Amino acid sequence: MATTVAQGVHGRRRVGQGETFWQFRRYETGDSPQSIDWRQSAKSDRVFVREMEWEAAQSVWIWRDTSPSMSWTSSPELPEKRRRADILALALSVLLIRGGEFVTFLGSDLRPSNGKTTLERLAKVIDRGDRENNGLPPVLPLPRFAQVVMIGDFLSPLDEIEDAARSYAARGVKGHLLQVLDPAEELLPYDGRTRFEGLEGEQSWLLSRVESVREPYRKRFKAQCEGLGEIARRLDWGYSAHRTDKSPNTALLALYLAMTQDRGR
Image (cartoon, rainbow, N blue to C red; front, side):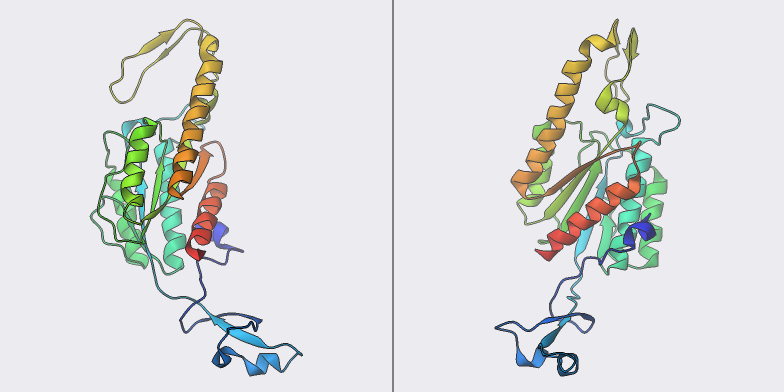
């Protein structure tokens, strides 16, 4: 996944002080004369300067929802939401580490780092199979100007989700919310007499005609997703949604590009 997405993507580079050449561009008023590349300029009637790649790494903290409700799928042909969240988290880590970033999983007690051993440690965290209780990220003191990526179904009450996200935004941490959902959670495709049982101790619910509540359910579900987007806008964070019946590459590319644009600012 990471290799596929990396093709054609320039990565999280930014112009600044560094030793790695990035690109040539036209000379502009205010540019230092020392930045002019005379050899490149001699090839045309324009003056060009050399731009160098900004080399300061940034720590990125990734959180995956590991609550029991994530271990669900509506069909044997679809992956569990947790499986898809784990793959997206690990593939994003590969991309970020290739770009020189320091990465860790939020709540794992691992310090942000990069390199092959970092990926091995993160993979072991996933293999451990830890389970959380409430589907919300822990509130931990992250360094200012770090970035946090939260991956989950985000079906908790909106005010609780906003409180968790705002606790990081108040410290100057930028963030991205990636909502991972099973298509049945959005569409409620069932008909007739159906019993629903929760995975986190909820009381079972028997409906004689599921189709009678389909439209109000879909409106409620849409309001939940739109509420997440509004939370992200208020905090100047990113938000995107992904269904497990869609390609994970598309979700990963959208998230990575959003982080690239955010870093550019």
